[in-house]
Image (tube, rainbow over all chains, first blue to last red; front, top):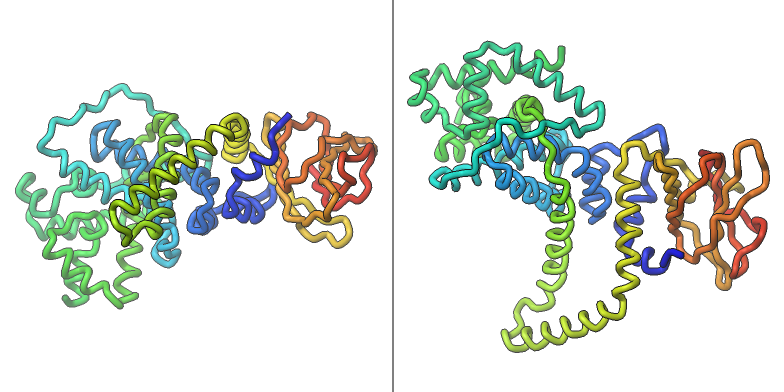
Amino acid sequence: MFCWQTFQQRISPPDRRFLSQMPNASQTMSDEQLLAAIAGQSQIALEMLYDRHAGVVYSLARKIVRSPRDAEEVLQDVFLRVWTRAGDYNALKGKPLTWMLTITHHLAIDLYRRNSLRQTELLEENSPQISLEADVVALERIAAQNALQKLEPSDRLVLEALYFEGLSQSQLSSRTGIPLGTIKSKARTALQQLKKFFDE
Amino acid sequence: MTDPDFQELVALCALGALEPAQMARVEAHLKNNPQAQAILFNHLESVALLAQAVPIHAPPPNLKSKLARRIRSHQKLSFLAPVWFGKSFWTSSVATVFVFGLMLSVVGLQHTQTLQANRQMRRLEALLAASQTKVFLMQSLSNQAVVGRVFLAADRQLFISHTMGLEKAKTWQAWYIKKGQSTPISLGTTADSHLLIRLSDDAAVVAVSEEPLGGSKLPTLIRGVAKL
């Protein structure tokens, strides 16, 4: 026999509000709706957002920090920040995933720079790559990968060095010999191209 | 900073590749400038594509429970902070020891119940997180108003959550009706507005009725119905 009374106490009022707002079977909660519920302190909504996007957040962090252990730390920090600052999210400033990935990038680059003098655990080349997401998220990922592949190799190199390695434009310039002005223009046009290819 | 200068730097800003001095100039330009902000957000959407193109790795399965623990401890600290802020060290220490002692005794008494509730919460979390879980609206028979939700997982775990009020000396009783039949079968009674239970494969309708304490053999007053 279940202990319903104790069970009932474990569902917090924000979660009850969230559950009462769930759409019907033909719809799913959007990321925006989940963030609104998280801002109202619904842990169930946070778990749903985690299940949806933890894979991409963790993978981005792992690509930047190059250590599974550090990537785990970043992942937790990102979702803790989502929990405490969901109320700050503004839909006019972009999609929730963009907001979360911006947070991920900042935290991961910070950690990577802090650790840059320390020897970091090397990524295992054969670590499993698993598809976690729902169909829509997976399709978007494939489209993003295709769009990235369509870029000129030199443009792709500039974007990846700046974004994943956390290099500044001058650091990249001194490493590769590419003039600063070229880096600026390549970064701008490559981002525009990437969006165009993705939308095609 | 002029608009052309900003246009030149905005992509690098979105990529996080500006030097600190340049970043400060860009931030100053963005302040109270919705047009410039829109350009930056547009670039951030493109940058997000870079992140999405990364091959996916699964985070360790235990990370979610670690995160839940951190959030719970964060909540407790936020709750205590305004209470103890400004008190002397000794006052707050003695009070903290007292509170923890009290909590320990309560925790001891409720241990069994908590374990049981934890199991229920894990079942509920799994049910809500599963991508195959379907959500159905529970409606009032009288005016078709939405009075709750029914969550049905692929393994037939059923969670009913409704917002209806209950009169004194009454209880809720949940029911289901098999496909092609009309006789309701009881799923049990509860005083709560939530119910988690396993449902038979051939159920076509789920309902909640208001009953005298102890429940009834057949529904007395049906308050909500969900067609599956």
